[in-house]
Image (cartoon, rainbow, N blue to C red; front, side):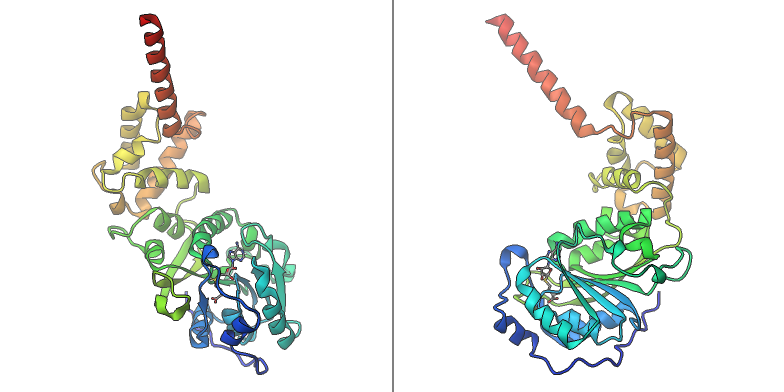
Length: 345
Ligand code: SAM
């Protein structure tokens, strides 16, 4: 997807620098909240430029903090920016930005994991799923502990076309720990290939736009940071429910160094494991000795389609969890041991 966005012509009036804002409002980063700030407005401009053309866009910024990226977004000729921030200390500094850009910035004190963005923007901006993406963008530099669960949640929203995707194929530009960014875009056969690669790539075009060195943040995190853009696909590559795809993918990658039949076997109760795994692999036409990282999206599609049929034939199968079976067996073994001891004493 092209990203020819240019920062527009709206100019914010002279404002204190982000460093001064941090001093003025005593916004020292809280280590427990993994707060790392971007103070260099050339970098925040770059993130916003790479997000695409934001002219007249409705933008949702997650975790604005002291407002570096917020300023760049406000300078991009947008229609409206809604920011959601969990830490109240940042609200007065954001209010200052709101006063500098009248009618443009809406500040919500809340948690991105629970906020309902689907009600925030006008219905008139909605597009059909098959159309080009709507003029709605999500942009954010969140703590790593939030960005990974959040992207999984939003990927599920994409599969259901709800949450931020009631507007259509809303694009997202988000930061991740560089290793996670690499997993998100990892292709078949690469050593970073993982659960996240399949979950993201079966629903979106995923681009690792660029990497920001850790030293650009204050305070400096231990790792570099990858900026990743997601554009939901018109048709997912795997047309099965999100939870089913997630289950197959999770099982495959739990033994990432073994042959793929090892993890796939865990989809089935022990009594039928050998036979059902063989049937799954045969019907999906997959070599059981392929390693998980060598399975392509087409392989995963076949696996999910066949597993879906097997679940339709056996109503108990999808709920099966091998960890539960293991726990139950341990409990039974323990009870047996206890009974034997009672008899002997
Ligand atoms: N965007 C700013 C920047 O780039 O300088 C701040 C980045 S800092 C890594 C992450 C920000 O996200 C912090 O301001 C933090 O308070 C906020 N945050 C963390 N968890 C959040 C959540 N669940 N919902 C909303 N904001 C959150």
